[in-house]
Length: 102
Image (cartoon, rainbow, N blue to C red; front, side, top):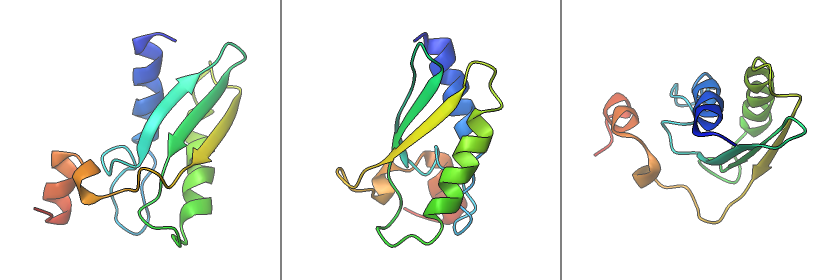
């Protein structure tokens, strides 16, 4: 997969907003990896801010919707993992400023 394609995947994922925090999942540091295989399956490895996150299913549905806007993406496979766990250190500078996190 080319760097341009990875950038396209990550760009599409920036349109997925965590409804509780109001920041996109990329800047929150929830996305650990994004790949596209030869068959057009986008494979996303990510976490959520907490195991009991009630917005998990909605976030996954939004990921599917946003990635399928890319012509290269035929199917989407979201793998939610808990190790390594998410922490505020994963957040971008933008997200930290927006949420008032130091």
